[in-house]
Image (tube, rainbow, N blue to C red; front, side, top):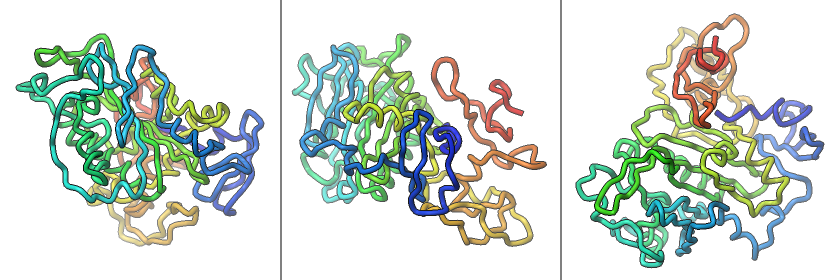
Amino acid sequence: MCKKFVGWLFAAVTPLWVSAQQEAITLKGDTILIYSDRSWAFPQEDPLYLLKPDKADSLLYQRSHANRQVIKHLAFIASFDPAQRQSAWVSYLLTAEHTKATVERVANFRADTDVPGGTATNDDYLGSGLDRGHLAPAANMAWSEQAMSESFLYSNISPQDPAFNRGIWKRLEAQVTEWARSNDSLYVVSGPVFSDEMDVIGPGQLPVPQRFFKVVLDYRTPGLKAIGFLLDNEKSDVPLISTAIPVDSVEAVTGIDFFFGLRDDQEALIERTCDVRTWEWKGILEIDTEDIAKGDSLMVCKGITRTGTACKIKTRNVNGYCHFHQDQFLLAPLSGNEERRDVSVQCLAITAAGTRCKNMTFSPNGKCHVHGGD
C-alpha cells in the first residue's frame, strides 16, 4: 500500500487544506510547494519537470536490460525481450483527448514485423485457454485507426488468465483512463514480470508471466505524482485502491528504471512517494455500498474532497464516510476505542519477495497477523 504522505516524507507541515499552497521541507532539506489536493512541486518549475519540449519524449523510454529491442509505433514504445518473445514493458502517453473514442475496435492480432527475430503468433495461443492480453489497452488507442491496429501487434500482447484480463486488469485500465480525463495527461508503463518458473504455451514455447505491473506518472504541475501496481495473473476481487504501491517497489521487482528522463532528485522523490488520496477514485471504487452497515441517524461525512475541503454530504454509514469517500475509510488508521475495522482490507505489508501481502485483515493498523497486525 502507498505510504502515508504526511509525516513520512516531510519533517513538518501544517494541515494541507488550510490554504491553496504551502511550503514544506523534505527530509533531505529540499523546499517544495504543497497544494490543497495534496499534490506538490519544486518551486519555479516548468509544467514538464524542467524537461524541454524536445526532451519530453524521454519519459516514454524506460531503462532496462541491454539485450532488449526498443520498437516505436505511433501510440506506444515497446521494449521487446527476444528470450521471452514478448515485451518487457510498453510505454505510452495517455491524454484526455485520447480517451475520446473515434474509431471502432477491430481485433487484428498479428506478429510485429518490426521486431527482429519475430514475435509470438496466433498459433502460440491456439487452444491455450489464455487471453491475448493488451499491455497498452486497445480502448486507449481508439483515437486513431493506425493506433488501434498497432495495439493488436504481439509486441503489445502477453498471455493472461481470462479472469485476470477481464477482471482486475480491465478495472485498472478503466481507472487509468479516468485519471487521464481528470489529470489531462499521463505517462503509463505496463508489462509482465518475468521469472525462472513460468509455464509455457504453444509451439513457440511462449512463457506465461505470473504477474503484471502498471505504473502511472502525472507529470504536469501541480500534479507531480506517481503510482504503481503489481498484480498476480489470476482472478482477484480486491479493491484497486488496496493494491497501490510506490513506483520504487515495482522497480525492485522488475529491475526496470522508470522515468529516468526526470531530474534525479525529482525522480527519487516522486517514485518513493505514493499517496492514493491524490488520485481520484470516484466511479471506479469497487466497494459495494449496500454491504456497508447502516445506522439510524444522519451524520456529516468525515471525508476530504479532492479540492481539500471537508465533505458536506450526510450519510447513515456507521463508518462515517459517504459512498464517495469509502476509500478514505479503508486507508484511515483506526483510533480511540475502535478495535476492529468494519471492512477488511488487504494487508499493507510488502513481503520479502517484494510482493504485496495477499492476506486480508480487520486490524486497525492495516496489517495482518504475520506482519504485526493487532
